[in-house]
Image (cartoon, rainbow, N blue to C red):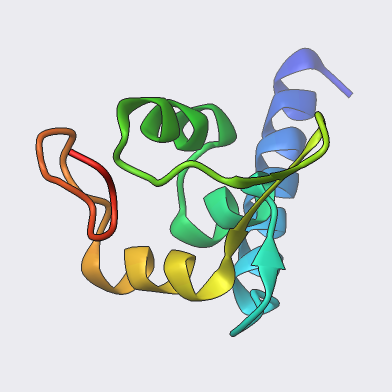
Length: 94
């Protein structure tokens, strides 16, 4: 395989992952960042950037390496859209 063919295959694999993640997204419970980003149709680094900007609320942390969000909250973001950086999130401190 050429470099270009490898790049195209990786891109196809990534799109397939996003499709599967969106179809298998739970209605309730906790979800990880990668799962949430895929469901929202954004990249993982963009997802974390939005968290840092306050556009997506901070996760619940379980230890140093486990961050989760409520699936219901991520569904709300999908329905209503991710707020602009200047908008206040419902339930967030000013």
